[in-house]
Image (cartoon, rainbow over the protein chains, first blue to last red):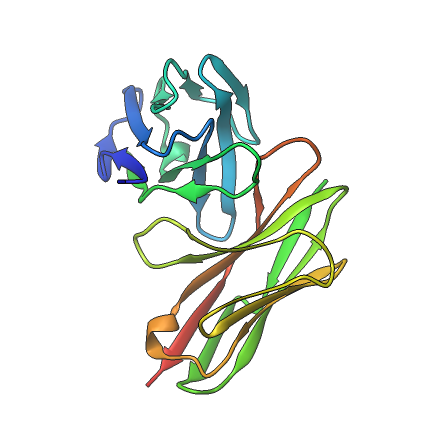
Length: 112
Length: 110
């Protein structure tokens, strides 16, 4: 049981480039979410999904897209990277009936 | 708007010196209050969920408590391996999104 996995661990992008951060979980959790962590600001919710085919925006959704075609996968797409998107990105999942969420190891993204 | 404030920002303890971390919050309709541990370069690791005032949870040297306005994470006789950043978060209303505090960075010196 690998839990929540994320790839890549590190990524450097130039302004304007696009990319997809991958997230997968093998716990059959219906709830998945993406957070970004910036110094002094805590973790902030970007997008979340309550099940396959259902997504919604969090606190800081601008510049990011998500989709959920399977229960296991929840990729995060950066459409046109900006330096303000330099951050550490965490994916999390949780099962129905609880509010606990379990986090992946993170992707450190730098946009130059 | 839900708010979570953690104090202190940083705490240095000698090994064996017990202390408490504070998480104060304002929320409408608390669904759960969560504590996580985060090591450098890693994702947050789930520790506890507290659902109602008066509830307590324990795990090894850690004990979490909850009142209507605050939660405390008590660390008894800490060891150097307890050094980490401890995050408090809450979930409210019908949404499952978490609102996080900025964390307390704990350093335990041998």
